[in-house]
Image (cartoon, rainbow, N blue to C red; front, side, top):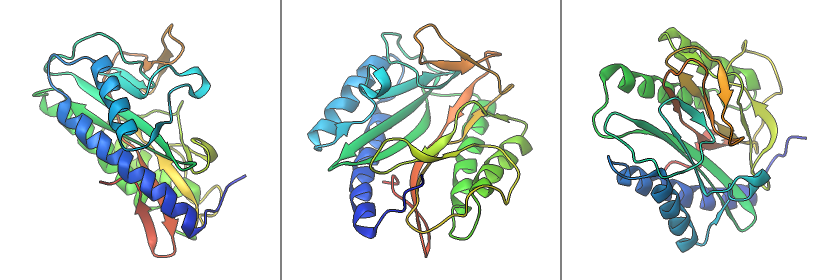
Length: 248
């Protein structure tokens, strides 16, 4: 069942989202050749706790860490580890938090040092698709309008959207209804209403859309080894249009 949140509830989600976005901004500044994803994870947990925010991912369905770190061909849910990042890598930082019983979730993909122009373009196009999807998160529209906007933009530039993973509702739980695919025809699905809060998260691959799950049971990578980018915002639907909760 899709929850319509009151303004008081959205205020709490907004407070959490601002702090999650603050932490992500700090983590982005730490990404550099030589740092490990495990170090970024420890830093993320410390920064959240210092703000009174509980790490939402840690322990969720058994996930062992605070931060999801997906490097290069990693799509989502990568587990932080000791591998040191190298110049030319890209890394997705996906972070969720809970404050006063309400959740927010956001992600961005960050270059490690200098990256080639075609990889910069993958990141740019995937992030643009997120904002084009958000533009469609308007009362009276349909859920698939978001999905279609994402898919159209990504595929127009020669990339593929990941179909195996979706965005989701968020609020009192980290993941709520509805699911939000990153592909589909417009004008379908539930009618969008004020009070919905959605975590919209396109994933764009440089190659095909096939996915493999690694032996750790969490890390999803591209089947063909191509690079993947991931961007996410928590968005509240209001009568005045979409509000990005996790934009710092």
